[in-house]
Length: 207
Image 1 (tube, rainbow, N blue to C red):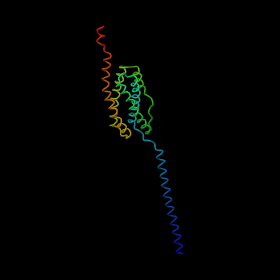
Image 2: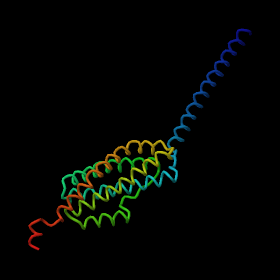
Image 3: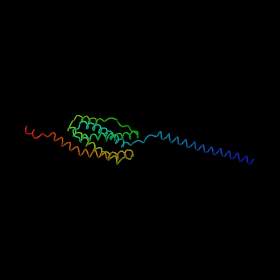
Image 4: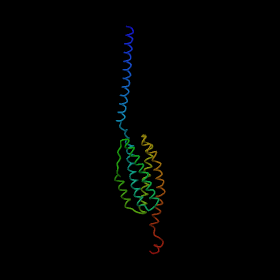
């Protein structure tokens, strides 16, 4: 009887051990499934209102710089202005794509079209040609990039969002380069326009 009792005890113990192992495996699988479901259903963290306003301003500004840059490549008289316009198209298109990816990742939707104010600016510049266009366009670029650089510096001091901070850190040096070039080109364009408008000595003698 002792041997039978021991055998029965060992068999029973074996069943208990197997049951415990199956229970542990089942619990691990359940937890893994729960974590996967939670991860799949997790919504992106929202961007705070201040950062959202910054993102929307930058997105609108980038769209405008691309559209005006396209105008410059077609209408500008100066080679420097045409080259600058193409750089605006290239650089701000990249910035716009980056910003849209960032916004989509964080659950934001950005307007796909120019706001009314930017449309009015584009239409105004579209009415110019030659040296008149060059002067008006570079004046707009000078004003726009001064504002952009100030805006990015301000945002770099207030944002705690890692995605926004990364975008600002990457984009600010590019904008500062744009501003530096605008500051060099704009005065030269004004001088050129003044020279074109100034009557020649021969014409003055005829008066």
